Amino acid sequence: MADDKNKEQGKVLMEWPFPEYEVMERGKSWYLVACIAVVLLLLYALVTVNFLFAVIIIMSSIILLLREKFNPEEINFAITEKGIAVDGHFYTYDLFHSFYIIYRPGELKKVYLNFKSVLKPRLSIPLFNQDPLKVKELLVKHITENIEREHEPASEVFKKVFKL
Image 1 (cartoon, rainbow, N blue to C red):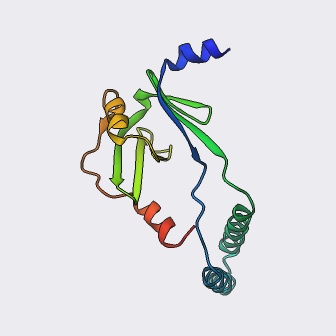
Image 2: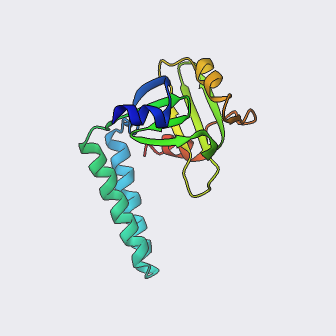
């Protein structure tokens, strides 16, 4: 079975594990502000008779609290001869539109892979101790590099600022 997988994916050129999500350090003041925000949003939902919004706020709060109780799982990422393998899923290179790497020493080191399909979310892979130049060298052979992107996506900045 491993031989079938190797034939499908090709030789692994580079691989590393990374956590499923980044654990944010939150103080007591963050929880206080978050509780106030949730209460205000729930009051707004009740005043505007928008019960679906109230359900979404409650579900989001529960998910955030549950994430605190569990550690993120390790996900394996691999660049192979024929595509990208992420946590048991394999994507051939032709499924990707472009990629870009954001590297700010000591602050941020990630590769972002954009699918051609707008229905698939962007893959955001932390590089940790990997050499970004080697990752770029391997990917640029198969996927177009978006050299205009110099900043991380707004959604990731939003997550960092609000510690989500």
